[in-house]
Amino acid sequence: MSRLFRIAIDGPAASGKSTTAKLLAKKLGFGYIDSGAMYRAVTLKCLDQGVSITDTQKVQDIAHHAKIRFPSLGTVELDGKDVSTVIRTSRIVQNISPIASNPGVRATLANQQRSLAHANDPAWPGFIHNNTKIRGVVMDGRDIGTVILPDAELKVFIVAEPRVRAQRRYDELKEKNSLGQGETVEAIAQDLEARDEADRTRKVSPLKKAKDSIELDTSHKTIDEQVSAIEKLVYDRL
Image (cartoon, helix red, strand yellow):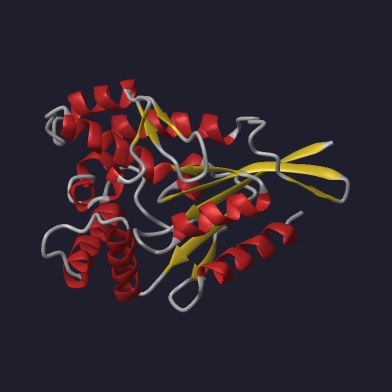
């Protein structure tokens, strides 16, 4: 006997949701789907091919033909190439908003995300609880609980203080040697503020907390504490 358990994690950029989601998926033996990485991958492909990010139709075509995969935890492939690091650079952050607000792109990627969330991948072993095999996925983004998986078994909305988020993103970029020349925490904070505004006000699938989502403030929590908090919520629902 088995059961599908889908976890939707939403929140603004650099709130800690992706790191938390990855570690949670690893701990539970679930699949991990980074929806934001899919938009980043499309942005990368547009930039590399010289396609204007504001050319609605051409960007939609790029998204339709992009082959995006998650072959292993934390790895993102675009058309067979590992782009896990390059999609995290400031070049992508500064150009992603028109891509993420493109209705055609969102529709294309939404269908792919729903299909992935229902996949019975043998690489996702899950765990046993009360003699039942629990298998599932953890998906993070900005509209997972409201649009992509409105019927998810668990929805969590992660938030954090603006300065904390900017410092986290700075540290992440520095660790990966992806900081732009002269890039500072203050500059990143401004980029995140602009991204937040764009995400909240876009007409299609804006960033917002689902009514049945549980808010988790990670400003003063370690990653382990964040993962443990959500893991407890999972078991509370089994």
